[in-house]
Amino acid sequence: MDGRIPRFTLDGVPDCAKSTHPFSTEDGLGLNLTRFHRADCDDVVLLVHGLTSASDVFIMPEHHNLATYLLDAGYTDVWAVDFRMSERFPYNTETHRYTLDDIALFDHPATLAELRRHVGENKRIHVIAHCLGSVSFTMSLYAEQVTGIASLTCNSVSLTPRVPTWSKWKLTFAPFMSEYVAGISFLDPRFAEAPPWTRGWILSKFVSLFHHECKVPSCHFQSFQWGSGHPAMYMHENLLDVTHERMADICGAAGLNYYRHIRKMVGFGNAVKYQKGPVYDRLPDDYMAHAAEVETPILFLTGDHNRVFPGANATCFQMLEKARPGLHELRVLPGYGHLDPLIGKNAHLDVFPHITDFLKKVS
Image (cartoon, rainbow, N blue to C red; front, side, top):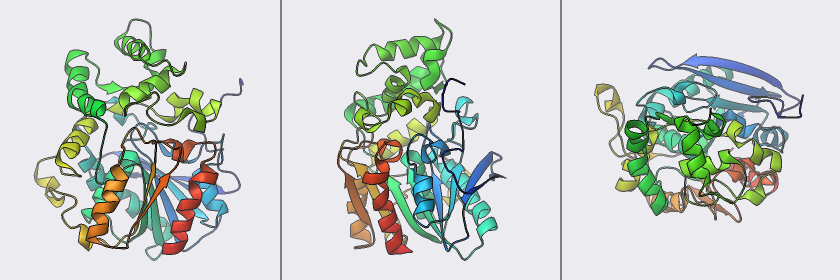
C-alpha cells in the first residue's frame, strides 16, 4: 500500500454499524442508501450529494466529515444516498438525456420510501443536500413528490441558480460542442489519465493550459466543468493536500444534459420543468409556483467566495422569505466557496455547527 485513500471507502465513519440498502426507481435505475447507525433516534438525517460527486463527500476519512460530526452531535441514525448523479454508478458515463426533473420525480421519492421502510413513518427526516442534489431535492419537495420533511439544508444553491457570465457561455455552448463536435458525451476530471492523444486527454491538456494555480489536472478540469475561477469549486487553502490531490476520486464524470436544464433555469430565473411527456405532468412547470404552501424550514448555506453559484442561495432565501416570512434561515460562510463547506479541513469548526444549530431548532 502507498498510503493512498481507497476509493469509495466507508472507513471515514468509525464506531457505528454500517449497512447498504439498494433500491430501484420507477424508471428502472438501481440506487443505494448507506446507513451509519449508532442508535435509533427520533431525528434521522439524510445526506444528498451533487453532480459529479457521491456520498463520499460526506464520509471522507482525511478530515472530520459531516456524517461523523452528526453522529457525535447526537444524530445517531445518518443515511447517505447515491442517486443517479453519483459517480459510484455508471449512469453519468452513459449516453442519456436525464434532467433534474427525472431526479425530482423518480430518485428522491424512491429514496424516502426506502429510508422510511427501515426507520418507520413516524421519525422526523432532516435532509442535508449539496449542489444539484440540493436543487433537485427542493424541486421534489416543492412539487409535492416528497412530503413530511422536517427540515432541509441546502449548500450553495437551491431553486434559483445564479452563475457567472463565463458559466452562462459554457452552459449554452459546451453541451453541443462536446457531444456533436468533439464527440465526447460526458466530462470527467480523470481525462488527464486517459491514453495520450485521445479526445479526453487532449481536452484535459487544453484546459490545464489556462490553469496555473496548481499542478492537479483534475482540479483544473473541475473549474472547467463548474463555475469561473482559479480554482472555481473551492478555496485551495481550505483543503488538505491529500484532499486536493485526490479530487478525481471525490468528483467524477458528469452527464451533459443536466447542464441544459440548469441553463434553462438560469434564463428563467428559478427552477422550471425541462422534460415533456405525460409522465412529467406530475411536476409543475414552475417549481416556485406554490412556494407559500410549503412548510418545511430551509437553512441556506453559501460561501462568500462561491464561484459556481454566486448569490444563488441569498436570492432564494429572499424570495422564499416573501412567501413564508420567518420560516427559513441564511448563513453566509466567510472564506468558503462551493464545495469546501463540505470537504474543507476546518468545516467541522466553521460550517457544521451552523447545521446542527439549525437541526436543534427544528427537531
